[in-house]
Amino acid sequence: MQRTDRITSLALIGLGLIVVWLTSRITYTSFTDDPGPRLFPYFGAAVLILSGLGIFLRAGRSEIAEETIPVDRAQIRRGGIFFVLLALYALAMKLFGFYAVTPLLVFAVYWLIAGPKRRAVWRGAVLGLGCTLAVYLLFTLGLGSYLPEASMF
Image 1 (cartoon, rainbow, N blue to C red):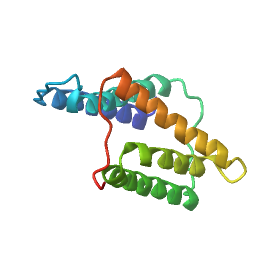
Image 2 (cartoon, rainbow, N blue to C red; image 1 turned 45 degrees about the vertical axis):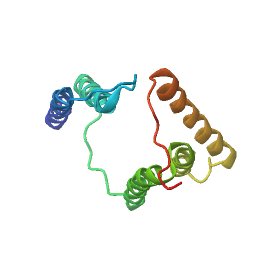
Image 3 (spheres, helix red, strand yellow; image 1 turned 30 degrees about the horizontal axis):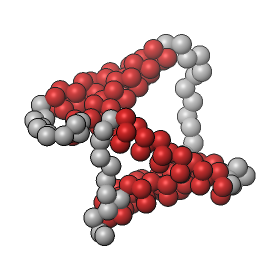
Image 4 (tube, rainbow, N blue to C red; image 1 turned 180 degrees about the vertical axis):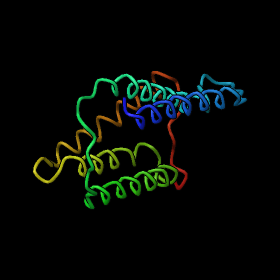
């Protein structure tokens, strides 16, 4: 196991446990069946802990030697675009609501990931609407939670 893999996996697991501990200290009372502000941090903590465990378990089996990977400016630019898209998504969701903004974000992320040869407008539209519907079904019907509504209108 590489030393950096061990450090990364332990850091992710530790960070996930810290998030669980801090989230459990949130006091929240609700008169509805809304899961409250603890739901998303618990999901995030689970992802951190599972990722850390995955890195830890996989690192010992890797036969590929670490190589120096050259910096690709196109990938750095795409990473920056993803960051800007998520920031705009958060702002737009506050202004226009979940239902108007989420299909557009999913379409934009698909367009960035698919690459020029595999892009299709119809596929992006289907993905955007399908993901929005799936999140709606999961959170609104499945968990009884509320999705952000527009504050501008």
